[in-house]
Every structure is written in structure tokens, then in C-alpha cells.
Image (tube, rainbow, N blue to C red; front, side):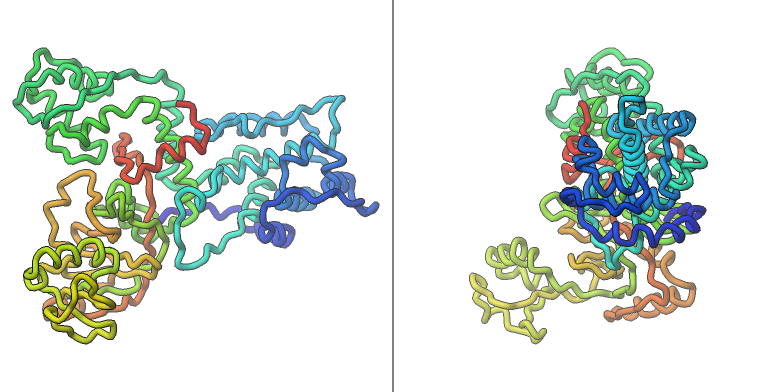
Length: 531
């Protein structure tokens, strides 16, 4: 969904054979040093015997990292690389700039180069920090699979070692360009980096909490109004606090602006959700920028110039063409106890006038209890009872306390929860994008209402962007029949479901999303944030 740098491709092709084995090895402690062949270059001998030659450095380098260093030095003719002050200073300058990327430069502190140090060990130590910095800048410092796993319908075709070594080779000639190429090129990342760079150098604003209380609507009086007004002044949403305790128009307008920039229902009504977002501290808000830069480093590996991008946290869908967002719509996503999964797949087919076979979790936790309470529930919901092979069963013959292996299916129609159309893509979670009759919920915020699938506010407009004119005409004909049809797309469309809680909008303003799955604090802790 975004253009990727490709000018290092030729270097990648040159260094790929050198690192093929490195990518295949899991991280593990260095083996006990064995005698190195005498015909190895000094730097390669040192790498082969790190525990004895550079004991302080050996503990910081696992087996895969050792192989990357060996490939890096072999790529450069096995010569020491950091004897020149100018090159070291250029690297140090770029490492300091990693602070603007939300990375801590102290994690990449360079070892001293002086007469008392082992020259080869110092050189290897600098190279290790260099390669690690480039890797973390491009792929992220944390492993996405440990924190927010993203399922792929196709295994990613990339070799991190080859790419990092390509950046590193370039950097020995032009350090600025190497770090800029390693840095994700996506607008999502670059715009947020610019915002974080500015915010992190400014004093944190200060605002006090807004007390909880009953729903506050425009025109009402409430003792919390002065503290609400002062909070909005301190946050930059209001020029000055009005007097009195009446919730007047000027303050309502400021509240609506706040709600809009925090992905809330912008109705000016102060409820628990708005109070919760108002009370998030300035330090947490700043740290949100930092951790979402990490998320965008993860996400950058799966973005494509064309396709559908979903932000689950914000319940928003964007369609990209030639790396540019051309259309957006609101969504309803999984609630906290039934979260929408993160995944990368391809939309391959449309189900028109779909029936709905109720998934096991919804059947067990929602439908069976409702049927037991109300014998008319099946008829009211137009639900058909089927056996495991899809044959109809008489509901009155079912023991609903122990129904056994049955299915519930709702026929196509205006009350079907899937609406008129479903966009399907391979995944192990049985989730998809679909229409819904629950249209009023799209005005809410946050919009975490579903059981994991993604409800789309304007599904037919999304359909129009996924298909050719001929396919659009044919699907319109099939929709008009009211009969269920499966329609396979001539060209599958990439779809990526990610999760992030802040981005920069087209006007350059920050837009936050409620952390509906409570993931931010986990990432802040893992990144070593100081709150």
C-alpha cells in the first residue's frame, strides 16, 4: 500500500549468498570457541573465537548475529571498517537521530576506540551496533510475533539479513542515505516520526483529571464544567475557559473537536468514554506516538501499493491505489472479549445475498441461551436448524439443553447479520468483511461491537473499488435476484488488518484511537518507556 525503496536491490543480490545460512539459524548462545583455521583473516579469526578473543562482546552476540557479522566483513574484504574518525562520527550522528524514530540511542552506544582497547574487538563491536540499529530501524526493535502476532496467508518472501547488509554496505559510503533507506518509507511512518520528533523536544503539557459523573449534555449545568474547560484549554482545543458551570456552545464545540480527534462519537455529550480519553496523561499520549512508530515498522513489511488497509483500533478502512489512500469508511470490529485478529491475506471472492451459518462460539455463548429462554427465538430470527451434513431438522425434536452436533443457519434477507454482501479472504479465524443491518452503530465511537468479523458501513462502494466495471455490473445482476451466489474476483485484492492507536491526518493533526484491546501499555513496558 506504499512504495518501497528498491535502490539497494543490486546490493541485496550480491550479499544474499553470504547470509543465506544466517537467516536459517535460530538465536542461541555462541558455541564454545574452537581453534580458527590459520588462513582466516584476522577479523574472521576473532569472530570465530569471540568468547576467548573478545569475551565482553561475545555475551552480546548470538549465533545468528555472529554469522551476520562474518558475512558483513566478508562482503567488505575482511578489513577493519571503523578506523576512520569521520566514518565513526557519521555513524554516531545517525544513531543519535534514532531518538526521533522512538528508538533509544543508548541501546546502540559505540564501544570506545583507544590504545587500551583491542582494535579488532572495538571494530566488531561497532559493526554489531551498526547492523543492529539498521535492523531495528527497518523491522522494529521488538518481535511483532511476541506482542501482536499477524497471520499471513502466504509466508513473507523477505530475507532480513540480506536487506540489513545491503543498507550496511551503502552506509559505508553514505551513512545518511543508508539510515534513510532503512527507515520505513510509508507516509504513516514518516508523518508520525515528524510529529514525535517535534513533541519529544517540547515540555510536556499539564492537565488535571476530569471527574467522573452523570452524562453531561449541552446546555446542562455541572460542577465539572470548569475543570473540563481548563482541560481543553491545556490541550489546545479552547483558547480560554468560559466562566460558570453551564455547558455552553463554545465548550461543546471544543469537546466535539476533541472527540473527533480521539475517534469518539463527536456529539458533544460527555460520557464515560470521553472522560477516559480526556484523562489519559500527557506522558502516555507522547509514549503512544513512540510505540506506534514501532507498530508502523512492523506494518511496513506488509504494506502494498494497492489494496485494503484496516485499522482495527480506530475501526476504519482505507483503500489504497498506487500507494495513496483514495477512499475511507467506518467499520465495526470485534469487542475486547472477541477480538478481530490481525492478518494479511487477499480478498478472493464475494458472497452475494449471503446466508449466515452461526459460528460455534456465537452459537454456544449467544444463540443457545436465547433459544432456551424463548422458544419463539428461532422463528423470530428466521433461523433454520440443520444437522452436520446440512439437512433440515425439526426444532421441536431437539433437546436444547444438549443439542448435539447441529448447525443454525439464517437465510438471506434484510434481517441477515451479513447484509447483502460479504468480502471473503483465506484465514484460519473465519473472519471477513461484510455488510450489516446495524447501521446506527456506525455513528458511535469506539465501534467494537462484533464477534470478530469486520462490518463495513458502505460495502457496495467498497465492492466498486475491488472489481472491474464488468464485474460490478454482473454482481449487481446477481444481487438483484435475492439468491445466494459466490462470485470469484478476477484479480484478488490484498487486505491487511493492523492495529495502531494514533496517526497523522491529512491536515497534519494527530488522531488517536481508543486502545480497545489494552495493548499500548504492554508495548510501552517492552520498549522501556519512562512514564
